[in-house]
Each structure stands twice: as structure tokens, then as C-alpha cells.
Image (tube, rainbow, N blue to C red):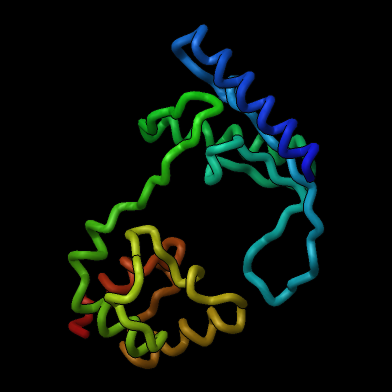
Length: 182
């Protein structure tokens, strides 16, 4: 582990020093770490787990996963390109990238529905947590069984179907509740 930290530190320092000699950075300019992780059988989980992860050092949420090291790197490259397409600012290679919070504009517009929803479906206080526009039912359910149970409860409580809502996003569910007059 100590060897890995030292290697990462040298790689990070080298990439940062090199970044001062160019103005446009690409994925190749960033220090990348590959990790091979043990994948345990969690057949009840809806999350797909991969044995390989590739991530940019000091930019912890910029990562990719795959069955192989190459697939993980390809996924990282796709995520990096998607970030650029959205107009994201690139941090200097080797520097610590800040945290980027998702928008809350839509969820704030649906606050009354959110208060009801989180209390009745999850027994949670809406004001006691951070919910972004990107939040999903998947963020609150740790298994397929728990997810199906919540979907059924939503349908029974509010008389709405949510299976067609992309990613089962909370704002989509709350909007559907608002439209139904809940």
C-alpha cells in the first residue's frame, strides 16, 4: 500500500509539472490509477459490479469500470469526454478537483410533494438530507426486492405508475405526484 501511495504521488507530481508546458489537456495528461477489486456475488443487488476500476488521481469522481483494465479505461475515457461535452472545466492535471454538486432547481420546485413522499415512502425528513435533481429511487434501495417494494408502495399510496420514469428519478416521481394532485 505504501508503495502504491508513493507511486501515485510521483505520478501526480510529474503530471502536474508537465501540465505547465501545454494549455489544452487531454485524458493522457492526467495521472490514472487502475484497481483490480474482488467482486462478491450479490445477485439480489441491482448494481452491476466490475472487477476493474480506472480513476484519475485527485479527481475521485472521474472514473470508469469494466470487466478488464482496458474496458475500465474506455469507460473512464467516455466519462471524461461526456464531462467535456457538458462544458465542464478541467482541473490542472495532478491537482485536487473540487466537488461538483448536482442541481437542485427541479427538486426545490417540488418541495411540498417531496416532504410527503419521503415521509410516507421512506420515513425520512425531507429537510434532514440533501436531495439533488439527479437523485433516484436506486439511491434509497439496496436490493431489487427493496426497490420493487417501494415502487409498489408508491403505486398503492398515490395511484400513479412510475415504471416509465427515466432512471426512476425522484423529481420525475414528484412531478407525477403533482400532476395527479397528490
